[in-house]
Length: 143
Image (cartoon, rainbow, N blue to C red; front, side, top):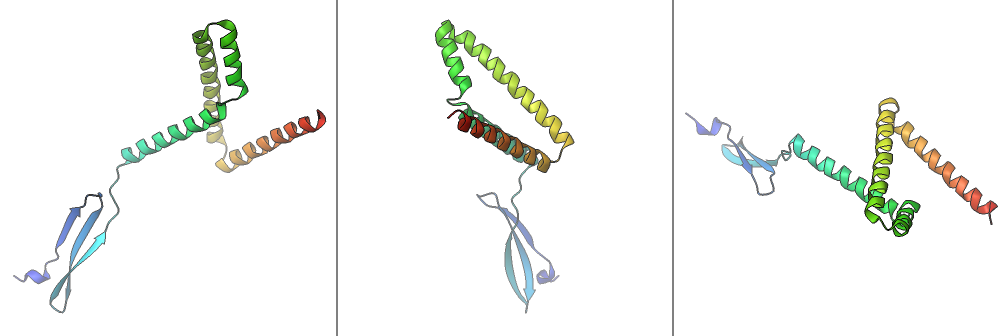
């Protein structure tokens, strides 16, 4: 039995979770090992967890930053100071924000099933442009 003619394959997992494959090559009766890195093995559930966490974090940061100092926050601040019932104001404003967010998510899901992402993106851009033009017009007229 000639051992040089038998292909040898080893799988090694390094500390960085990359797999290395060692193959036997037969050149001029010399055995040379070739190490080829393979793609790391990542399960779908790990990718899904990361993407869910990334979506949640992005959404939280975006909405949190958008809501700081806006008229909703100022209204709840004034209502809380005026009513002397901060927890009731908190529950009412929280329920209102959850309801408006739910409507946005449901409408977004409905639009995603019926329209292409390009159409939604262009429509959102056109609406934001229209709103900014209306605000600009209002500033010019009231000056």
